Amino acid sequence: MTSPHTPPTGSPDPEPTPDPIRHEFIAAGSIDANIQNLRGTITVRAEHGTRVGVELIPRGEAGAQLATRMRVRFDAERLTVDAPADEAHRVGVGLGDLFSVRGRGGSLPFTDRLAESFRSAVRGVEGLLGGLEIRVVLPAGSRVVVSDGVGDLEITGSLARLEARTGTGDLHVRNAAEESTRLTTGTGDVTLGEATGQVHATTGTGDLRLDRLEGTATLSAGVGGVTVREARSGSLTARSGLGDVELRVAAGTAVHLDLATGLGEQDVRLTPADGAGAAERTLEVHARSGKGDLRVLRAGAAAAAS
View 1 (cartoon, rainbow, N blue to C red):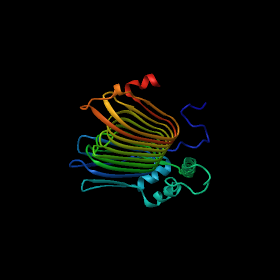
View 2 (view 1 turned 135 degrees about the vertical axis):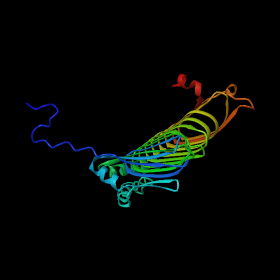
View 3 (view 1 turned 45 degrees about the vertical axis):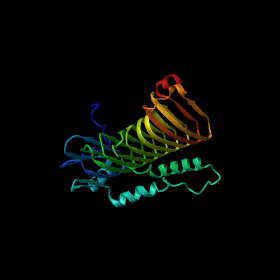
View 4 (view 1 turned 30 degrees about the horizontal axis):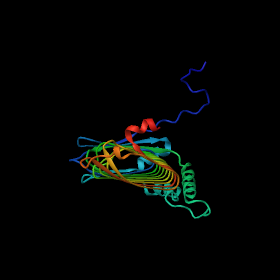
């Protein structure tokens, strides 16, 4: 009789899970970091203290081989995590069309050709086997650049500056950096918690959501919706080539609206009584959609309107 924990006779042994590779450093304070991955998730956590940690977690044999070839360096308060150049070239070829619109199918609308280009590029990298998860811990207040070929990015903690980009994958950022935040994905969703500084977020195809705005934000989606759940003050520019734009304005905030849609409806549910006095918060909004609706309402009325 075969034990339920014993592989049947003649069956191949399960592939062993590759061991993670860990690097630990001590910083004097906030640092500069440049982190690159090719296929797999990247998680960056900023926390109080002086610890700098990098953990490479392979997925599959190909991921294990990639992990051993990654270059991790920490020198002069600068952290660098580099992928090997030849592997980067392979992924780059698969994603070469991701940030350009192909000339073929010229009779199709721009947004349709854009979506077709994204789908084709994603199919081109689906055959890449194995992956590598990268987890980074660094001091709060650091300045970080993160780039990935195929994979999701997740950023938490307080940073001074952040630039994050992935060819295909979702971006999740708990809070925008204090000074500036720039987020880019070719295909995938972008979610951002609170924005108080300058924010630029772009997705080629996917939805873009900002939970709370008290700064300056430019949000662009080629094919997908743009949502701001609570705008309190500052300036917002929101664009979608094909998708809806929805803005929920906090109570006590006066708004100047500049709206335009090529094919869609405008639904503004604000009244003069909703406005704010001279001493209250103000918000300037420029919203555009090529094909989609534009909706503006008070944040407190969101549940009733939905």
